[in-house]
Image (cartoon, rainbow, N blue to C red):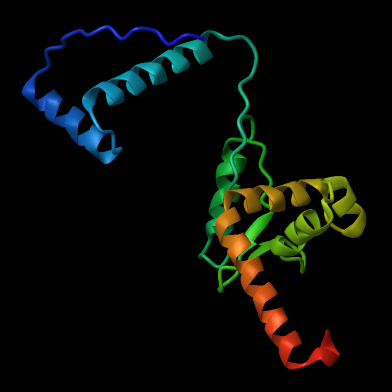
Length: 175
């Protein structure tokens, strides 16, 4: 689709409103007012489109949280219960005190599921066959967490691989 030609126009605003606009623009790290106003307008158009459409609008939000944070799980559950008509939620991943991602209510680290995917090219269904106690939703959540944190997890995999190689170099009997 060819890019539309930009049209310039002038807007007069009271000084106080202009300061608010500039504060919001800077806070959201826009390089200039034009980009910021363009995105504000697009946002309003999306709201209007959603208001006019028939049927439901669906979104997926992935939350990763520290389950040791006092009452956080209770607060998330409370929000879900008070908005039960609008929110269907399932919490599947948590971080331990060392920042390691685990699949909730299991003894399986996210990185273990990821290694199955990376080493064997396993599909979620094949991973489920290897880990029958995990639901497909938990497996998908683990893979989603990986893709959201791929740089960090790939670095951790690399560190572990190097550590194993060092041990093998020192003691070939264990490799």
